[in-house]
Image (cartoon, rainbow, N blue to C red; front, top):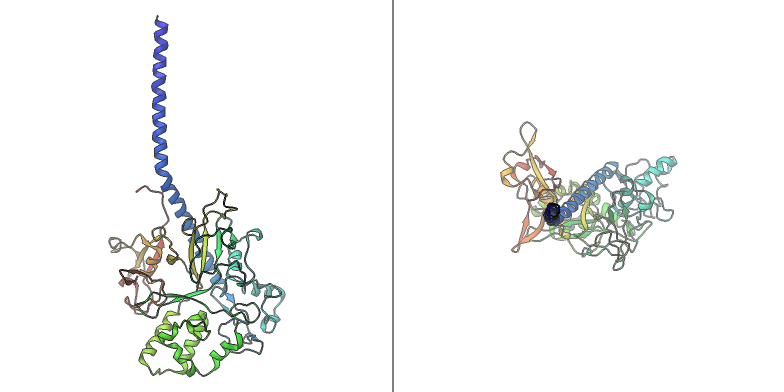
Length: 457
């Protein structure tokens, strides 16, 4: 009798334990399900943080190395021959600038697309090893990124030139699907960390003629004339711009004509940064006393604007991997703003999220630090003003590190970096805060990108 009672007691205890275990499993499962979305968001955010940091480092490295124009490129050449070859480099290597290339894709080592004038100037006197180094510096952005990011040969898919049909042309709209089955789009670089880069075909600049209009994205003028089909000059157009009487060109320097829609290399807005600066300086030197006070103010302002390069490329980063097929479940959807995000890489090496592509502004945030009288950067008197978790681009604008301002907090950002939205029909410009500008136009502030953290809020 006692033995049977003992058995029943054992069975009863085991059932209670099982129920407790099942309850615990249920609680853990529910908690895990509740954490799945925050975890997914965190993983996405940390990958975006990594992508921005990687691109920034690469952009700065390329800008520091510099680039060399093709002898047929639109630049600041003052002496060309009948074959459109720049002769300025006949006796020196004066074509090296600390900027990114003007072209997204270019194989400078190609026998058919290489620089046709490389042996016509001082380059021809260099030994092969040095000549190869300068050819490397003539490569397109894709080729330069592959080198700086140490992408092996199997991970490189850079086009030989911008004429390749598969390259992204986002001059009118951003691509939403990067699926090979629906669009003829292929990745350009497969990074060692698993991320994939698509580098858009065009070089752009943004410009708004007034504070009452949103900036327009302009393609930097490219001609198909000459070898390399990249930024070459048909019929010596640049030669005529640089040498003809500036009086015939002066009417192009008004605010209205500056943004003329005609795709004409004689309109400043469609020229590379270096050419715009050279022409503006030439205009000022030849006409120190501009008749129109409005034009004089505008010319002086444009000179300030282009002190920092505002030409940019658009780079799309796939955070995980490229789908092998529609049935591929290992990778994301290959969709813009889901697992693929757009960044702007400016030719001075600056990298910013492209908010106009729909890039979520609450993902990459930053804080502003102000330099005090001792030269130290602090957040004194700034935390209470909400400048600790700003969208990254807005933080740059408030800190006077982006856009085009002079020494005023009320200047209009004609370049469009800080003028990018409308609220109730009014253009919204993120102007620098008072602590971040000075009489010399130099900022007193710096911006620090916030690293994403996995904290339940």
